Structures are given as structure tokens and as C-alpha cells.
Length: 329
Image (cartoon, rainbow, N blue to C red):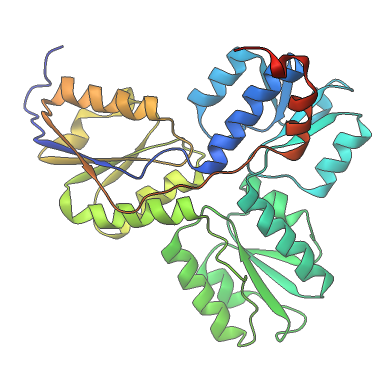
């Protein structure tokens, strides 16, 4: 393939810490295992993760993705996505006699449990997050009368609560570390007795990938972030780079790369959100090699991840009782 004229990129710096996190790996495994042992179709409420390529692949294997449980025939198998759902959705699934498997990321489940515990103690809960994000909606459903969503420092300055001495905060797991820190600082100033989570709610993968981008910024002229436009953690990676003064663009596939972006770019950076598969990373690497003359690809190392989450208990029991469980692959 001919190289694009007038553009010559010397080096591609690839974040070593990129792509799937443990929660995403688990969610995909849940759907694939369910298709094996439960039969087809298996219904999934919402995209199992926010990545079109992955969702289309699972759809081709027999998964049916829905937004409303009214679309699911009674008695069917249903999987809740990694983002979590409210108790009302869980109850609706029971009422419709659906056989549910919960693929909620364990780190999201932690926030749900915290919300329930705080509500029982009578706290006003300030949930830092994006009000329209499916994860936040699910958490809100745990105690809607106790929770208020805070999306910015400005909102943190204005929020009012019944008892300023009995306030707690939680966060969506895929937020910007810097933005969240700013909001929390406002809340701590306004509510000196603010109750904080026992452990940071922003997930390890979100933190690690944002910190990797910060470390990479001085070494490149432009950053491409591979991820879906509705992927919160991917969008945050772009924002982190831009906040450091580096141009950054979110792409879903290699074909989304625009030639105009790369004018005068000598060193190009690439990372991938926690729901972007490695196959798409390699697609981008191949594309920039072929189109823009990249001959040097270098991985940028920060920290290593070794997190692993087991399958949901209910799915493990189904697998153990399945005739196919002992069958050779």
C-alpha cells in the first residue's frame, strides 16, 4: 500500500498498559460461556461492554442485546452488563421469569454495596459521575431517595443536603482522576465531616491507564485513543492528554484516522480504553505503518496489571452441572 504523501511519522509509541481490564475480560467470558452452556439465544441487557466490535462479535455468536426487558421472552436467559443495574431491573427480570446472570464488574458492585450501606445509615450520598451513564443510573437505583449525582465542581458548590454533617460521596468507576479530585476538594471544604469510601471507587484500570497517558504526554506530538464514543474511560483518556496540552483524538477503528490530524506529527502515541480489544490496536499499528511510513514502534511501560475476577457464582454452577462441562474442547 502506498504511503500517504507529505506525512512521515518517525515513531509510534504504544502504551504497554492498554485495552481490556479484568472486568471486561470477565464480562465477555460470561456471555461466551453462557452461549456454550445455556443455548442460544442469550439476551444481554445493554451492551455487555462499550465496544461495537466486541458486541458485534458476540451478536454473531448468538447474543441478543436489548435495552428494555420487555424485549426478552419470558423464561429466557438474561445477562446484566458489566455496568450494573438497579434493584428495580433485577426485580423486573424476576417478575418476567427470566433466568438472570449478573456480569456486573465486581468494582461496580462494590459501589452499589456502599450506596446501600450508607443509605441504611441515613447519609445523603453525593454520587460523582455522569447522570446519563448506565453505570450511574444503576447505582442511583440502589437508593434514589438518598443519592444525588454531582457532575462538576460547579454542581458540588451548589448542592444542598438535609444534614451537612451526614454526607458521604461515592464515584462512578470510570471518571477522570483529576476532575474527581477537584470535585471532592469542593465537597470536603463545604462538608468538613464528609464520609469517604474506604477505598477509592475509581477502578484500578481507569487510574492506571490515565496515569500511563500522563507519563507518555511529554514524549509524543499527538495521541490516538482507541475506544467507543460511549466509553467513559476512553473519553477520559483523551481528556487527560488534552488537559496536559497534547492533541488527542478518539477513534473506533484505524479507518477513523484523518490525514489532517497527522500533519507535522513526528512521534505518534497510541493507547486503548479498557473495553478496546487488542486486535483493533494491532489494526491501527499496521495501518500507520502502511500509510504513514512508521518504521519504529516502541512500547511505553509504566505499571503491570495482574487482576483477575472469577465468573459469577450462578454461571459457575450452571457450567458445573452442564453435560458439556466434561466434554473435550
